[in-house]
Length: 253
Ligand SMILES: Nc1ncnc2c1ncn2[C@@H]1O[C@H](COP(=O)(O)OP(=O)(O)OP(=O)(O)O)[C@@H](O)[C@H]1O
Ligand SMILES: [Mg+2]
Image (cartoon, rainbow, N blue to C red):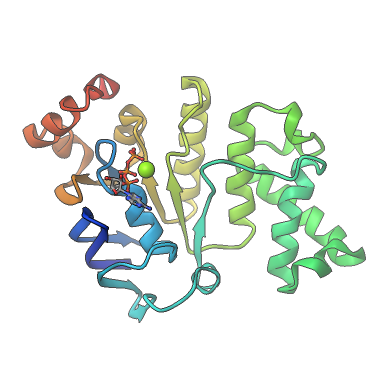
């Protein structure tokens, strides 16, 4: 079942064709890996989906509803959950409080009200659930400066989960993590998927991509180069060539 249907997206930045007639779909309950060498157009595609970039051409269809003309916040309300690549937590708030802000916003629709009284207490309790879901409830009362980057990245996912998204859109969530942290983070994505979450994952760590993705779409130079199961796609000569040109093919071994 297709949740998100992206059709014939083209994006030009001046003379640069960042995307050319790219179509892809995100099925309910899958982890779709969107991969490709640097500059392939992956982040641009994510920005088109979230509404940061307006495509020159093409359609973004969420279960039959066209999102093209909706602003970013309206797309969030429709269930698009996207984590920030650079996590910028409120440093003077604990991890739980950071997530509670989002949880409170979801409950009241008025973020400022979530700072007060009952709503604040409920939101804090609620936030523990989301922190547990990403495996860091033990750090609920810690401050951002006192935890490793892997924790902050998980907190960011907890913050997005608190908004009860219908899908998670993640741009290189494993970047900057060591292999142990990266594997732990990827395991959480698998767990979320097993609970029914749908995930679009942009990632350069091909070992983890191969391990956890249900399906891959490969972009190169703004065009779709390949699509299919990780085993098939990561063996495809054109895909290997695109990565070899980049000197990053070792990442998949
Ligand atoms: N705001 C912008 N203005 C001009 N050109 C841009 C802009 N954003 C992206 N580009 C260009 O569009 C192309 C695609 O970039 P994009 O960031 O989508 O690639 P990417 O696949 O995410 O790469 P990476 O793996 O390095 O993150 C590149 O040539 C890039 O320089
Ligand atoms: Mg990118």
